[in-house]
View: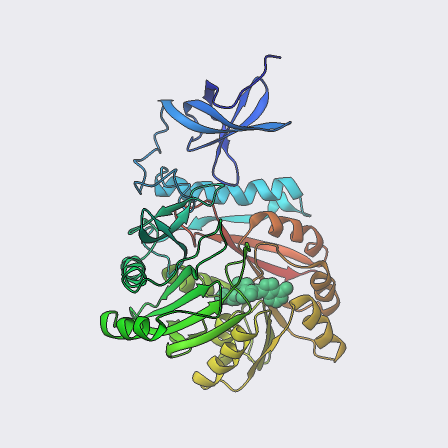
Length: 454
Ligand code: SAH
């Protein structure tokens, strides 16, 4: 076979989208993933990477367009990540997400998978400007301090002042903070030299229009700190909480181990389904406030809690799910890896006058078996793990506990389908309800309702 070269172009018919939102076609029988191409299209693919068993390509041009193709939602579409479906009409994005769940089930084939009720993906009323948080690297470009996102597969910063999925206040603050850093000549991190100080700006915005700012720095020092804080206080009234996180050296992790409060409150407060939640800088919160309330409502409905039930809220974050349910249960216990989030969760219980909930620090796969060993056997369990899904130890403990009511919130259909292989031994899947928490991206969230088998 003739050798394929990088940069080579050829026409390609796109069959479907893969789970990352790339178009799939076959060139000389080799599977080819084309970013920016849509099912049913004929495109000119340009090879960007060659692997033994597949090719990566980008869409150089469209010869026959999909009826679902729209003009990209952001001028930087294709140049930065995070909006990989920004050229696909929103209803088609939702159909894609339902299909991702089906594809994952077909791959792992958990017991009875052909009979699962797969409900159509619930969309967002506002599929743009929904993200309540931005975590942008900061660099000096042409003598100016800029924040933005990396170009795909690189550490080349693409500066951003607006972005299709970010809320406008976040982006305005990002731009103003960069200008402040520049005005005060605060040293900015240089990755090549591993020198300079400010590496990343993290901004979290609440639905009340208040903001939490964290400067992630290469060292404990933050020169001109007093000036900086004075300017934030006078110029940026939306900012109510300012912290520094110290994360020295070249590392792929955004956060280092130490966070210290610089000004204002150590938290911001968000309202979800009528309850208040304090959030420390590092604590996880769902990124799409409109969809979060829908997601939790779906989970609450699926769980169908009874007044005498004890509930485990696993992978709890700041306790948002368990505390929303506490008034309908006898007792709630939760666990979460990040100590600051657990402190928030316990403070949030008190803040909402909830006395029957308690949160512990630790890995779900360690804490849950320990609780069982101590004789605590919950009637209901809700899990909301990160993309890696459930740990086998956790699943083993679930089989031991056999809770009557069980709901799984998944942010990754692949690991969900994998976990269902083990879970379907003791539980029947009643339905899978997917919901779009991340419009314009290929990511998909789903709530699974189970019934325990006899
Ligand atoms: N239920 C929460 C958080 C879900 S995100 C909400 O809806 O906001 C998943 C959470 O699991 C994160 O807060 C993360 O810190 C935590 N986590 C990750 N691995 C974990 C583990 N092995 N055990 C317990 N918590 C974990």
